[in-house]
Image (cartoon, rainbow over all chains, first blue to last red; front, side, top):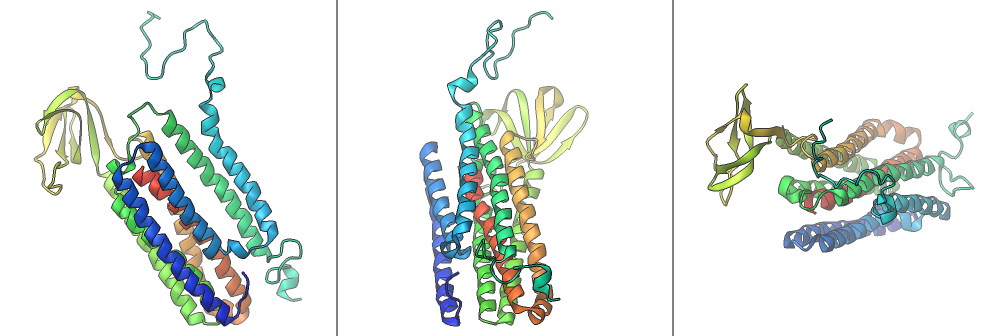
Length: 120
Length: 262
């Protein structure tokens, strides 16, 4: 991190306490919003947005990401790319192409529908 | 031969990466951890979106969000004390740094104690699923939840949970014939997909907390020796441990709303 004299560190300590206060307030906000019982899509969006702000604060200030070297950002960008691919898997499996039934000899069974007795 | 000749760039920055090797290695490890937790989060989204409508519970209906909020506070406080330990070392105050590490260790312990109570409650809380509706508390119900389950060959008795304003009020145990029961289960991982995901994610996160406690405990124990041997190495070790610890905190920041509130 940039600057490591006693005065620099003292300055950073003040920032750490401010970040801690912000994290505590945002935790209360997360719970308060959840107690309102918004529709699920809205609740997920708000909760993940607030969590992302908290995560960014932790990464930038506690993990000193703001002042790290460029090499690290390339590695983290690669990591973020693969993370996005991971998160995209549920969306991809929901696509019509993934659900297409290939064998049409037997009608596709609906989820949780009981199979009629066939006498086998 | 000096130590730095045996393990190059363990204190001074590597010309290629711009940081000492230990820190670079730790960041690579954290990148692999993102993939590990990312895969589990992705599985959670897949299972939740694929669940038939109305079958996936809201976390707050099953889990104790108040305890989870307390644990969130423990972890974010421990993140501050961890980074403060590093700052104290940078200001050459070993004693203060050890105090901060000890507080971090204690907060991590408090987190695990709360988790123990949460898990214990789940393992001692039962649900009886019925084959046909049964009159209970003035309603026809298909499920009865409660504690102190006693099973015999012919029947199951359970102390049902209290409903309404007075949650502490105790119900008299009721006995249900086995022929009327579909399933008896506690709120463990086998109860439902939601709880299987909950125990997998929080269990793995809990193991990370324990791992962090082992390293922080070692640093407290060996602080004087390492500081005397090479102060810079002590600073770097606390910095690397801190990076790991903040990552564990970061994971919890996402686990808390996803599992307990949504």
